[in-house]
Every structure is written in C-alpha cells, then in structure tokens.
Length: 193
View 1 (tube, helix red, strand yellow):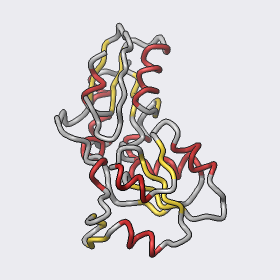
View 2 (tube, rainbow, N blue to C red):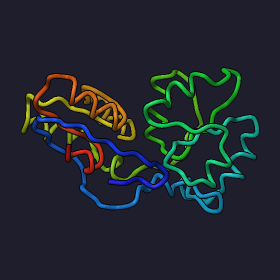
View 3 (cartoon, rainbow, N blue to C red):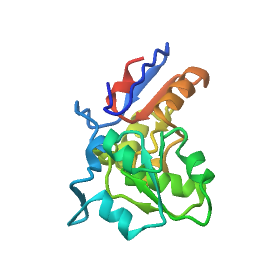
C-alpha cells in the first residue's frame, strides 16, 4: 500500500500468523490531504494554515511527512512516526509547537515527549476508526497475540497495545521478537509480509 508523500519499500520475511484489525479501506491516506493551505476543517470552522500560523506567530510547525509538498514548505520541520518524539524533544523548550496534521499522532508525541503542543484536528480515518473494543474483541479471539499499534491510532487503542511503533518498527518487532501471533492495528497493507 502506498502513502502519498512517502516513498518506501519494505521486504521483511515474517513467518508468523498475523491478524489485522482495521476497516480494510483501500484509499489515499487522508492525512496527506488533511492540511491544505487553502482550506482545512478544524472543528466547524474553516481555517488555513497561514491563518493558524498567524494566530501562533512564535510556534514552530512540525509536519508529519504524510503532507503535501506545499504544506511542508509552510512548515519548520518534518517528522515521521518513527522520529516524531525525538524531533519534538529537539526543539527549543521556550517555543510553542503546532503539530500537523494528525491529532492522534500529536497526542502520542505529547505523551511521550512531555511537550504541550497545539494539535491540528486532522487524522487518518483508517487509524481513527479503530476503537478499544476492536482491540478487545481481537484479543478475545487471539489471547496469545501481541498487539502492535501505529501511533496514529486513538489513545484508547494505544493504551491497549503491547508495542507502539512506526510501520517499520512493527515489521522489525514482528521479525525479531520471536512471537508467533500478532494483532496489527494499522492499515491493511502491513498484513502481507
């Protein structure tokens, strides 16, 4: 599965049983289009990134890599899910941070870094549709499985995960852990080793 804004190829031989939890939607990543400098929904109010930056003139804009080149140009620094916490921790502590465009990833980064941030109200609808009950149900069906979750999932899903990692981190964990059964809380493209 390809994600606009990100080019990556992964080939990891994993001879284990995997169980996916997710809506199984085949689509372009909505995170990539959640911030558009012309028009963005934040709650019920349409705002533009330029206007938001004007509201927070001293804030550094940290953009998740799944954004358009245009949005990246308006940002101060880009991050991936694998390095987002380190990126945020590296920023001057006296500067405010506007994290765009994924609210769930931003919440996880806040929890891990201890840094308060202004969060954009975008999200990846694949990850955002996963709920705590989805994980509980999968665990009931596969009690020995290890739950791997992407940090774009909702906080209540992350709270139930055994491991929270980027896509590459989940693949590495599955390959190296010695575990045999996984519940994978991310997009369906990761289900095919």
